[in-house]
Length: 194
Image 1 (cartoon, helix red, strand yellow):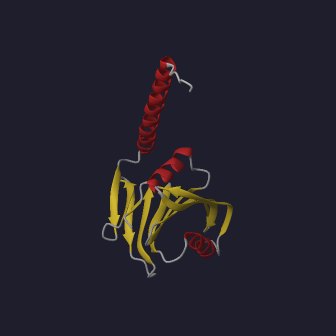
Image 2 (cartoon, rainbow, N blue to C red):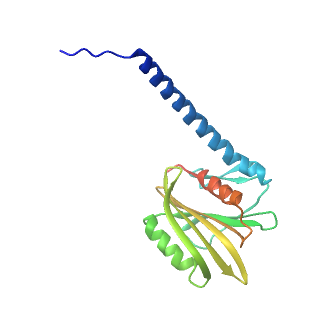
Image 3 (spheres, rainbow, N blue to C red):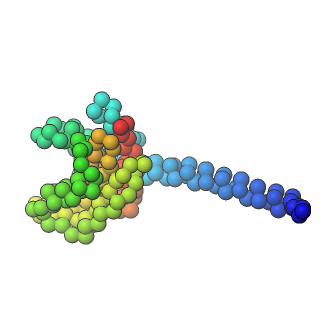
């Protein structure tokens, strides 16, 4: 029968290293959250204000100094629509909540074919991802509309009963890296209770 001897010195060092790794992971999570919030301050966008729709089933956040205007949709499958803009339309866009009865992949194909059918666009990039534990797509491209070109960033999140469509437009070549961080942070703050 063999005897195992525990090297107390190695065991102690291993426990200390594991503890330090856990502490660093905790700080990284806190740091990441603070960086996301700092990007709003850096761009003078104000504090985030919660918007709840559909009897609280969907919540999203927008900076409080952005102009937000809810509009009625003429389409039955669009349950909610709100336009937003900031800094003389340096950033503009909208958020929609769609009734979901098809797969997100099918929804994405249909949306692309419909939305871009009569528009010029280039550099189209679509990536399937996870946003706040929801199946999602991140889409970016440059579109031309009425003689103006826009860098376009779209986020589609799939809940049980809804698809949230969040779109940001900035004049072409004016988008900086911190804007894309703002867009990503706002998409991550969408909550669907279903």
